[in-house]
Length: 115
Image 1: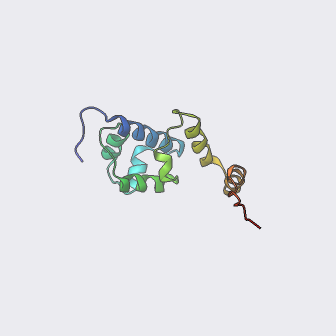
Image 2 (image 1 turned 45 degrees about the vertical axis):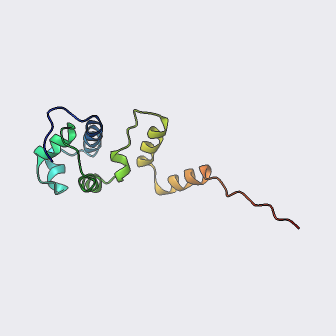
Image 3 (image 1 turned 135 degrees about the vertical axis):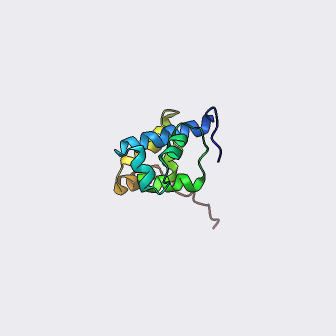
């Protein structure tokens, strides 16, 4: 995909999120590019700056190496409370997520039966 001269707003947000998650994981741009098999730190740098739109396969490759869900690359916690909540689940254990899900799950509505 050709490099843009000016960042695409959505690609820029996704790129910033990739950078944030990469830094949280303690990875350099070189190490993430190499270990995710993107191969090119230049391409990853272009993605992080929003100068290229990543493909779904590229996002999946990066998410796998960063050990996050694909959803995490397109969740922007600074946008609203819901996004913050989704982002917080990254630090939760499976048991904590199950408990939270049970607390928020709505039981199915019972249908009335006529006697």
